[in-house]
Length: 138
Picture 1: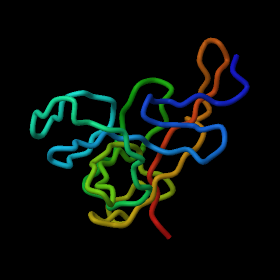
Picture 2: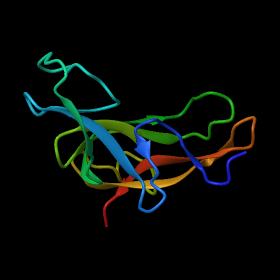
Picture 3: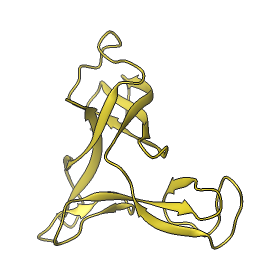
Picture 4: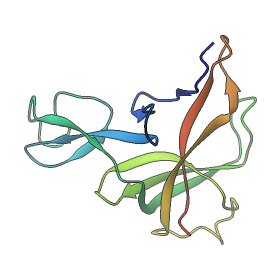
């Protein structure tokens, strides 16, 4: 069992001497940025032009869906969202700290990335995890 929480996804970085952050890979040819490590750009197909970058922690809500039915053990409803970060990178995650009510959620609303416990779940070895979420920017 790990004393420190582990990242829930490979592109969530947890440095020992700093704050958590999301890592993207940016194409040196066209400037497109993506989550996940890659050697070929999905936009322009340039090879070996990708370099790691720290993604911004603010953006705007592009799209969302309120999920009412899910796997057993997953609390519903929850808001699955796509956010355009300030650098143009689009990422998916859950929108938290807002009621799952379409009357209260606005397309384009400013949001921020927050890092928190991955819903209190632990793996079979007892390890806990840190995940990223979006919340309305105050």
